[in-house]
Length: 222
Image (cartoon, rainbow, N blue to C red; front, side, top):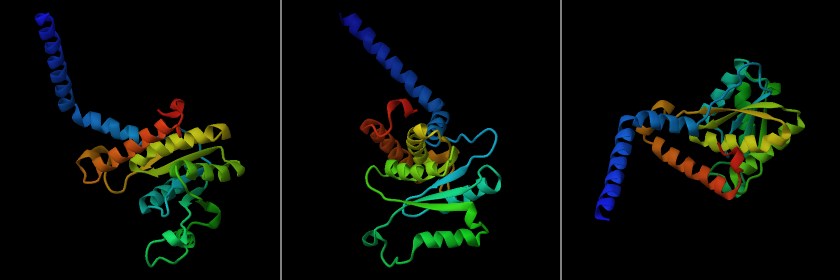
């Protein structure tokens, strides 16, 4: 019996050593693949998408807008759509009284975009925010006959957004192509950046929560 116990513990110790050694030797490759999983990027192989969707919150990041304009100007998409969350006057930042949607529209016009080249969708928000926002945006786009869209989302938020949009767009026959946007750090070195590990863990936890709550059905969770 003692010999059997020693043998079991020996196997466990060897397995742990092998696992630790594997992680140490292939740490960079493992972390890089983990980052690519959380920030998928699959652009269409040919043709042009009907729209490029830029996912924002109450505001839209400059890097996300730049990526959208790049995809638009390169002919990857015919039109650009910015999705924003509606801000209650009681929840606006201190001293912020201007109409943000009008400011975004004016800035895009100043960048040379015609009104016909872009649209701004403002969605009502409550929990779960990403799901509600995507449902509102796709509801508008489906009425316009959209059948393909490039989804641009910030960093590691991309995996959850992509799965949510993919799930909601399936019955609408809209094909979604994800493109993650990193403006604070690079994907190929995220684990060495100040905010990289924090962002990764935060978004991974939210992804697990969405799957656990059933906001993303299991068949769409990969």
